Length: 213
Length: 110
Image (cartoon, rainbow over all chains, first blue to last red; front, side, top):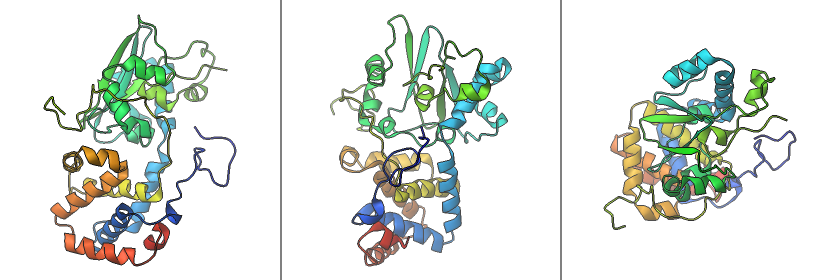
């Protein structure tokens, strides 16, 4: 989550920028430059279109998904539409979830859902932004379907044994979003304040919403 | 691997703890991502084509290359197969790019 203060050498998310501009050029970076220039020269794309696409991707963040979750928490009719057709409900709010069908799975008092892509890195990137590095890692992909409780514990999520854990393995044909359970004590909060409780990881299932202050 | 699965089908295997470190995406990585979206959206290849090349690269690539290094290799292979440019054109351009400077910033011209 973004910090409220700014550092010269930190990105908006508070991580150091990768100093790729002043370290030796790699083979794969060379390929990216050559590929991009050839695509522009051949008329496939333009520099402006590439910049626009990067800007669009940068603009997507877990805040988009959090807004959808908060709406579902306050509006039972919207929640019903979200569970029935996740893609259509997101479009209703002005978010474009992409061509692939968005399936929403709901955490309840007795069930916790978590999403993984064992085969690659399928992720609702149009609603949450690019996936975190760990989502694409061997450890997460391999272990989440086998020992989800242990993996969740590494994220700080300790689930009692009487909670059912459902693991959803993505494919290239659909995307999953977890609808976390609304935190206790959040009754008086409005939609915007509720959205601020919804973390990225709570929508993947590797986290829970923040408790209200 | 002894169970007949290909290397990328890693669900259920043993592995170490999940590393929660995160890096911010570098400009060249964002460009690879954007080029993948743009060229596949224009119908030059499909997500299945992207994955076919990634999976055919083999397990060693997963250990030795970063995510977007594997992606640029796959997008490039798909574009060559689609006839967008030839390997000769790519090779010649890569040589020219390298001659511009020793860093990404110099070679990319910004």
